[in-house]
Image (cartoon, rainbow, N blue to C red; front, side, top):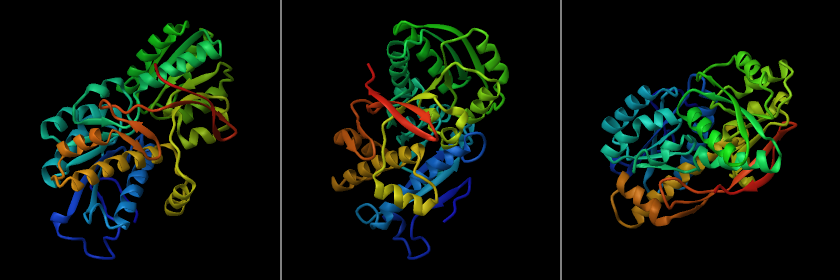
Length: 367
C-alpha cells in the first residue's frame, strides 16, 4: 500500500478482510514531515511506524484489537501540528499520537496534557522536551546528553580545543548550540564562533567561510535537515577542519556522500536483527535506516504498553497507556531503554562516517 501525505490511513489487511466493529479497533495518530525540507526523514519515520503496525495487525492485532493509524503531514510547522493534533483528537478520538520534530512536538505538548492524549516522540531532541508535558514520552535521550558525550570525546580524547558552531535557528538547533557551548567549556575547550542558519536553508557557503576564518579545531553542526548539501559545499570550499554532530547526521544520503568522509557524530545505539532488517528491505525496497529503526522502536513501545493496558482489563486511554509505560519501566526492543522519567535513558555511540558507512569508534555514557 502506498501512503500519501495528509489524512493518511493504514491498517494491514484492510482490503483482504473486514475489520471488526469500531469498538474493536484502536485508533492511533502520527504527525510527521512528509513534505518540505524534512520529508526524507519523515518518510523513513513513516515506514518504521507502518512496519510496526503492520506486524501487529498481521498477528491479529493486540488482544484481537486491530490498530488503525491516522498519519498527518505537519510539514515540520508547529501551527500545522496543532491543527492536525486537534483534528485527530476531536474527530478521530485517538488515544496516542507519535510526533516528530521539536517545534511541532513542543507546540502540541500542552494540548496533549489538557486532553490526556499520550504523545510519543522518537526523534526530536530539544532539551525542553524533557519537561514539556506529563503526557509527552521521549523514547531516546535529549540532545544535551549526546552533546555532553561528544564534547568529552572531542576535547579529552581527540585533543580538539577550539570549536565553532553552525546551528539551525529553531528549538532543536538552539538547544544543541547552548548545550555544546556549556559542555565544550566543561570539557576544557573554547568556542570561537557561532553561525545560525534558517530551517530549510541549503546554501551554507557564507556561513562556512565566516567560520573558516576563525580557524577552529572542529566545527560542531546541529542541523535537522540539509546536512548533505553542507557536506558538498564543505568539500567544494576545500575546508579541512573536522566536522562533528549528533544523531541528526544519521541521514542515508549524508552517510553515502564521499564529501562527509571523516565526519564524527554521536549516535543513539539502536540495531535491527537481521531477519527484521531483511523483512523491512523486502517490504520497502530500502534498508532499515536509523530513523526507521527509531520510530519502529517507539511504535513498539507504544503497542507494548497498550498490550499491558488490555491485559490489566483497563480501558485504552492516554492516561492508562502512559502509566503502563512506567509500570513496565524497561523495554528491550531494537534499543534497550528505561523510563524513570518522561525521557528514556540509553547508551550513546561515537560514530565516524567512512566510505559510505557509519562506523562505531567508541561507546560512552552521558554524565
